[in-house]
Image (cartoon, rainbow, N blue to C red; front, side):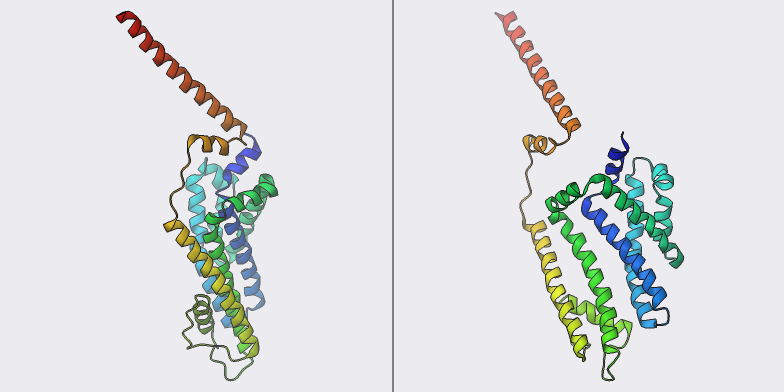
Length: 267
């Protein structure tokens, strides 16, 4: 197997790889923010909560890749699986190893080709919607909470004064519930609220459409002709399909000859 085909076989789906790559970038950015705002306990708390949400996702990704790899030892030692495992553990100093995960995704995409990447992502956009929405909700939750904390810190009348308040307000605003127990009182805080509300309407509207399509849409039928058309771009798959057709034709011919011989004997 050529290195290019081997690399492409490592792909777990374009949407999934983009999701993991984006999470890797976000987690590395959070490491930088933790260092920059080391003296702000509220910022530290927000980033810790986001990292706690991301931690099981990365750990699940490691086990998913391990159990679906063609060679588990090859993935662990030559495919930087050890770095995936260490970076998935809840240790601050190990998170920098997520650079290896990001590098692998970039390498795979470079070998897969930008045109094929965009085409595949658009073709599978319904399946990728859930991952895209999940990542964007996480981004809005983090940066919405950080932004409203910064905006409200200048007001003595602010009721969003802690990381817990900011995360709670951001989440209920994203979901368009809006309890009203926490709300921005500054103009800059209200601008943040406008952004979070608008993003929440769009994201959860997309999520609702995805769920409705998943549960209510009739199952798609795919016959042998459609499958052959889908594999037409792959010469090996096309050759295998033609060989199967020839074998089926030969078996059918052999059965007809056997029936003709039986009838001939009776006559």
